[in-house]
Image 1: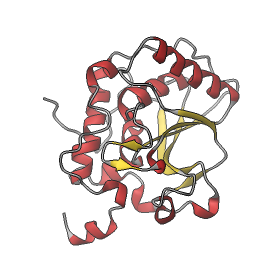
Image 2: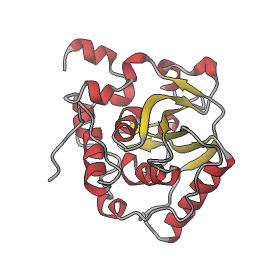
Image 3: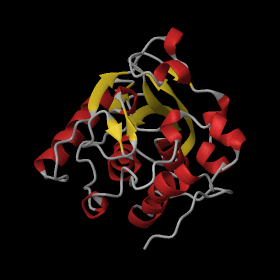
Image 4: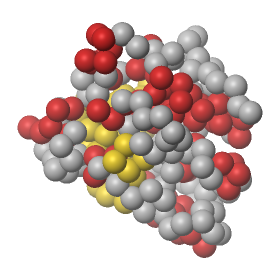
Length: 233
């Protein structure tokens, strides 16, 4: 890794040898997550928006960029004020922001409930409190920022469904909170995994998430021109 990249790569994405990807430790259980029982069509037609937080936004964005029906995903910040929505400030862990991903999707091709299944199955580990894998702090918390009351109902119902099914060996700590604002992250964060698939953090922590999406949820997987890829053993 060049010195230039060492100076640009943010704290959340510094490689820490020996730390696994957040979504792979409980791989067998997450591969068998059920579909949400409550998953109605949105109350308003047209393109919809969902916002998720699950650790370093590079990997979460990479996963949703490979989901069928997703038009685009953006890395950014949610949970705090506009004045503190910069990486330098958010990295301090006291702004209220979480590194988040905004997902614009076509509900005719993928439902909100299916996006939740992807989020809980492969995008992150919902049992890790204020951390994901090697990244520690409130800014790496697991959260669903709902844009509508319907999204709130579907998210809370799915968490209750997974909890009742004992889908995970530890309690789900994902917070379901209203979306008060989403602030786009700095330009070098956008599409980072796609642009830099050989980056050590991406290869070790995030590429396996995309591979698991392809393996476990093939009906939802969509390849890209430049695919974040890894061989699973």
